[in-house]
Amino acid sequence: MDKGAPDHVLTADQHVALAEAVRRAEADTSGEVRLMVVTHPLVRHPFYALMWAALLALVLPWPLAFLTRLDVPALLGAQAAAFAIAGALLLATPLGRALVPRAAVEEAARAAALDHFLALGMHGTRGRTGVLILVAPDDRIVEVVADEAIHARVGAGAWQEVCAAVLEGARGGHLAEGLEAGVDVVGRILKAHLPASDGGPNELPDRVLVI
Image 1 (cartoon, rainbow, N blue to C red):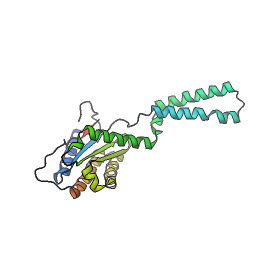
Image 2: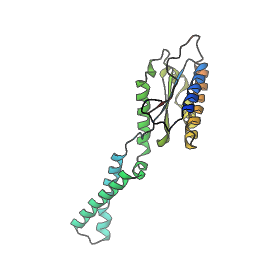
Image 3: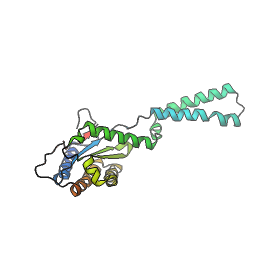
Image 4: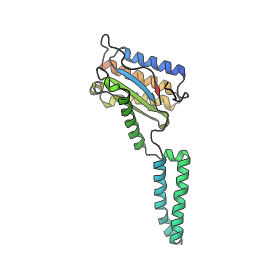
């Protein structure tokens, strides 16, 4: 586990078991697999919290104007109060995070996976066969990034089974088991398309990264 990473996500035994699962997956293939667990929200929600509060404040005066006898200063006061109350509520409670659009979370997950794939040097393997599985449990999302040599042979659809395997475990509170199942699926895919070459080194660490 990285220094400073949360120690409550995976136990020491689970780290060992997952590293072994990666070694097994790589044993019969020339591919390289890495696991990453993101423990913080992929999208910081204050922007969306204030956006929804502002939208409420913009809309509120219209029904009030039709349904009440409030004058303009009173309507403006109600508008300001609505923004302040809704903004505070959404910033201070889980509701604000729940209102982050799913499309924004998916885009952030894809961007994070691509960034980490490059930062970890996974694009530099000899055969361009790196595969990164990134999971953000709190956002209930998994992204798989595969380098060009394997992706060209497999295609995007093959990685859906990997994501489904990880999410099934994570949803049931068994993140480690889900990750291990996802690694097993990747191993089968790699073995089918990129069988091991004699004497190929292990180019990337097998340990799980938790950030």
